[in-house]
Image (spheres, rainbow, N blue to C red):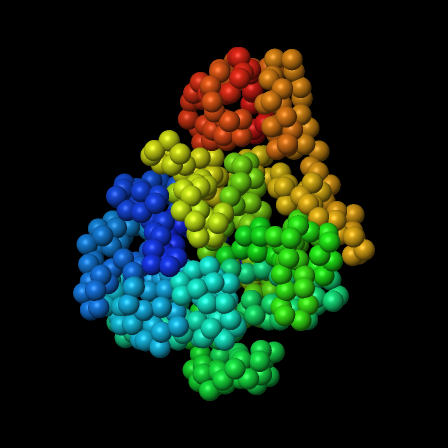
Length: 522
């Protein structure tokens, strides 16, 4: 870490996507109940967070053209300020604007810029802004894959949607800076690397250039020497690219990365189920999560931080760190991200913060927000029981906020994405390294006749250690018959143990007084 760098900060944010499928808007703030729970802000502050990424969404606020309802935002943003938290406000989060516009509308950028100016006038104390979250990802889902409104599936529409969002970001920041001259643009984007077999390498090269386009466009890097300039010019976008290159709007780089962000393209379709088959019109290939097919696994956080620092030499913030998985794996994902950020700082990168995303969990991301199935995944808080309950992630966040480190052994172990059992598809004749061996300490399971076989199998699967003897205080965790699934029961036990609350009697399906003890924890 450079001597002049302040300590790495831990930030947070509630998942706040407001996307549109057909004529239906889906609002995560409403689905999680945060819409009606102002007290959530005090819960967030109790974690020791320095800053919140927080929604001030165009769709929720401009209720008719030129008519604004600021009442919800007024209460929340002023409470955030009272709590002493910084804030990064987001104006569009996987949305396409209010009902009267969309990503392909020539008036989209101008409309968002007007809204941003109104927001800056109302909240002139806010320094950090994200006018559009993940423009490239939103353009892909809305105009290349057809999943979200306006449901287009062609490349020119995709690039038009991206360029309109980039213009909206630039226009919004101009409007904001007329009121707040030192306002910062924190530009988020999902970021990963695409790997490929040799026949698919051209497509992988295209995707690896494309993944940088949100930041490249804002930084004015898409000139005739850029690898995608000729491709976009052929579609008629040359004049827009030229205009962007002479008037850059340099951002703070906001890295969002998920375990599925790294992809692998493989021409050997017979190795994969048909649901993974696709192509580009020239070659057919399977498009799979790289972590499920490559050995060794992708490097992940550290590689991406290094890549972005070398390319842009701009301040970096991990703006989303979240894993929808069992609790111990959620801990390990955040811990690995935090460790990578510290390592990158020691190497000279200006990494400011790591953001624990999805503070309240989220709904229906397993269908990419296309189905209203109500499928919930937990975050730093768990809403499964009706009201927010802190999970073990809350304990880890507090450790990082207060001490910048943790001695939580469960978090420091290797995640499933580092284990050989992650592989679902054979690498075949690709060059294969030795792979990632399982962490012996994490994988060991000490069996006892007192432990129900179903519980033992679940702990073996998850790499949790068990012992059949009491902890230092002579207390045991008991299971009695009920309908609580094993995985859910273990998550609850980890939460109670690591968050520091008394361990309640926990119910587990078809089990009689099985005992699980503290050896799985530090």
